[in-house]
Length: 251
Image 1 (tube, rainbow, N blue to C red):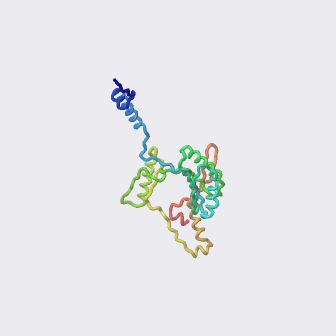
Image 2: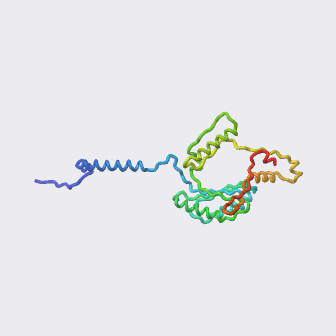
Image 3: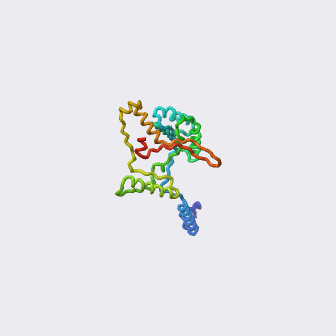
């Protein structure tokens, strides 16, 4: 009599049928660990998306755009020569203001960007800026800088001044909430002053329209003056020139 010999093979289905208790234990273990992982998994409804950008803002009051570009924008751009992971540099120069944006590669890690950000701050600190410029503002950029998490709408039958005051009061209350970084007020018209000039009087005084505009701009600026030490106290000196009313401009 002939007998056929078959190899001893064990399939997953056969093993599952013959070992039901073990399979049930394995399934329960997987479900338990999956549930624990889901609970401990960090979740963010408004996840912050980093752009790996560094913005450098320098104010140079009373200076034309051409002078700001040559004395502020160009030296800042040149200071980033040779920095690693650099993608591109973009700048915007207007009268009295220079904004330089330094973009790094998208594939870098957060730790690498922190190192590059510190390097950028060091390079900006070594740039020789002309007298009269305010301290440079160096800041990183992410989605939280332009995507609001919560929007609150205020409306009512009231004057512009009352609505503006209520919005500022609400802003102060929200800023006192933990983990709130910034609050912006949008939608209100900006307060503007219309200055009418007599061309004949300007010509008689030998003052140009540009000089008059620069004089008003200088009066509406805050210029730091350093520190004053007196005994165990230290005072911050600055020149205040905020224009708040029509009389301030008239004077």
